[in-house]
Length: 159
Image (cartoon, rainbow, N blue to C red):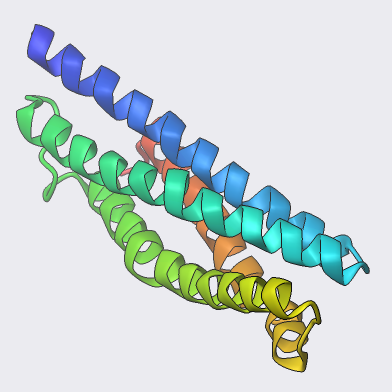
């Protein structure tokens, strides 16, 4: 009984870290999208990259691990036979293995080019093209939509 509650608490805390990381990553990306100043865009993308690596990545991994352990330890859910839980697991894997790496690759490239431009003192055309690429926004927004869908499935348990 108490072990189930401990796993549930750990899972809830990891969900908070995951959601905080998603917000801390996406807000600077949206800010960079709405800015016309290249310096502000570079700064926002660097901030998003740091938040993605420091908060979002550990949060999404811990959420998956704690969720699996909680579901396996719980007597209420069978992770395979429960339809809504299986759907949540598949959506989580899409967020983890498709959305996050696609977003991270673009952010990593932009951070590298931004550091290079800080050393040279000029903004390269390659950095301008990378900042103009909206890949991180698309995959990050898709991840946010998946989070909303996973939450709706976990709350309503439709099937």
